Image (cartoon, rainbow, N blue to C red; front, side, top):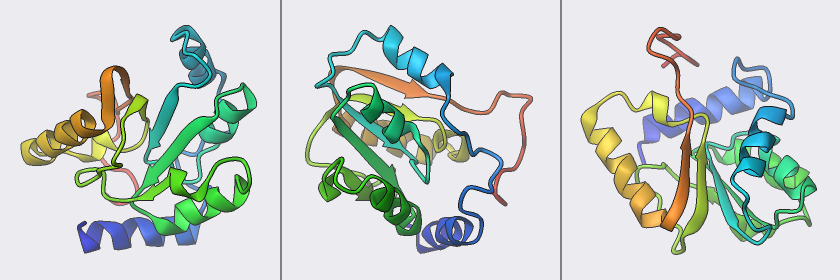
Length: 158
């Protein structure tokens, strides 16, 4: 794990918490997307770059039970764990650089609304692909949301 990258995100989540440009309260868009997938409620879902997102809360509210969060920031995941205490096991939170992530299991859905757009070189993009292949079930669903080509050139100082 890149110490510099991890330190950067620890500082962002410590200082700003939800006061960041990408913060989103419950979003009907994401829930509609998951509804449209017609997933069984026992499907396993990982939210990559969870931060302090409320996506896992929302998925639990609509009946999903096997949800997990991945973030490079332990500060962010500690807040998420605290908020979801007793609703999902602590083992469902992974502090890891996505490029090195190996959960030891596979997920039916890989959801990324906050990470891939930071991977601007071919090496990191290839490592991301390998991570997806390691952690996504065969015939799993990959959801990646990124900035548009004419979108911001910087986010959180990167």
